[in-house]
Image (cartoon, rainbow, N blue to C red; front, side, top):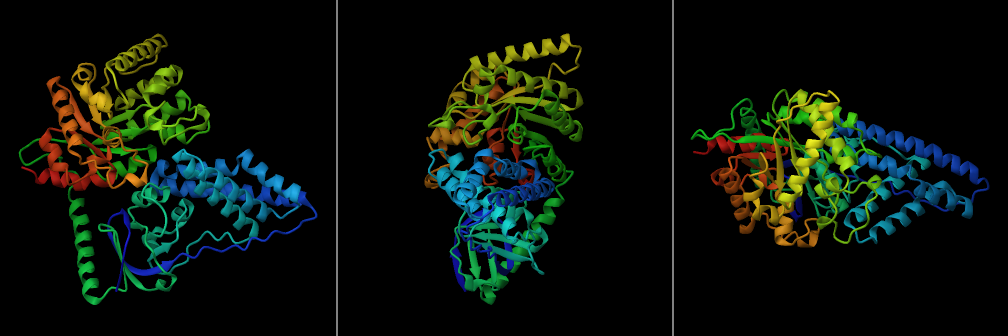
Length: 538
């Protein structure tokens, strides 16, 4: 038995045969061509086919992982149609009189190298995307674009790395787990794997000789066991049975209240990125939506979404939730979420820069459009609004003035809305924690964003993989801050919840309840496990 240690991306146990994904090694040769116009026509045809393939992948991904998970394929379509990218390819074809395959591969390498050399982490990540779209074009041009995964039985897919397009187009019924040598826990593929509930490991140093061998993926401990002995195999088969049994037990939690044995109710809500995620919210029986990341509406478009477009989305989600709470966070872009059409300047430290509520207050025309859509949609369900990245009471008072202006405009135009909907703020900076006693006098609720709160409190960039070993969301400082926020909220008679990833940390669920946390908002798949923990508490 060979035991390889890697890093878990999504937990769970998988037992089966290894299938090493061998990518087509396209031997791209430089060929002289007489007619460059013919090559450019081939390129344009390949681009049209590539964009159509990406649209099919997007549609498939929306059904399987929701709009937020599928957004990468819209980005790839835009990149494939980008003028700079296509002009570079055509220029190589025309000036060097070479074949389209060579020109695409050369441009892909050049652009990837350019992105990789940038300081900005978001732009660095685009290197993998441009390689992905270039490889797709080359496969189309060379006639090797086979999009189907061919396997009779479910397998553990092992690969050097997996592009998002490769992950989504696989038949999930044939995939037991993903195992890769490269990749990161924050990559698009890792996010897709988590959303698809498929166990996944990265940083595994496999060899091609492992192909076809029996293996075990231990998503809890990050281990990959190749050709396990009988004793180990039996042990993991029992663990797998227990895992399935636990899943069956959790299904019995559907329809039950999220309340401790002592009778204390907890609001257990779900985090979503778009309309298509609502199905998972309902399937997992969440009590409501505690965080609707509205920025995905902006990220998935190539221009500012109109009031009507936003209204239709918010209205549909509110209607589908049938009276359950829907807390929508206003636009939260900046840092690792950049949008080209916002035309924002490059920043050395975007995590602490021009982002979230700062953009909204600086560009009130964008903010008002979203607020109008939100208040209009409030007539169709139980909508609440929360504002991100708050650091002062002054900001809250500015928000209130803009809200008054919006409500006055709607009233004057005879457009109905609910004036008394709940409005809260996200507590995700040390400043907002320290003045939470003052903020509590101005709002209806707090939602603690533990991801950024941890980053800012510990002075650790959460995108920096080198600091993973000291990024500690269990740090005593973080837990004390959560307690302070909850206490200050309750003193003013408002409720306080957690919507960051820490809310889904089952090792802290009991502690959070003991602290007095009123609400936990987590990924839909965590709803039932957390409900069980709460119901088992005294």
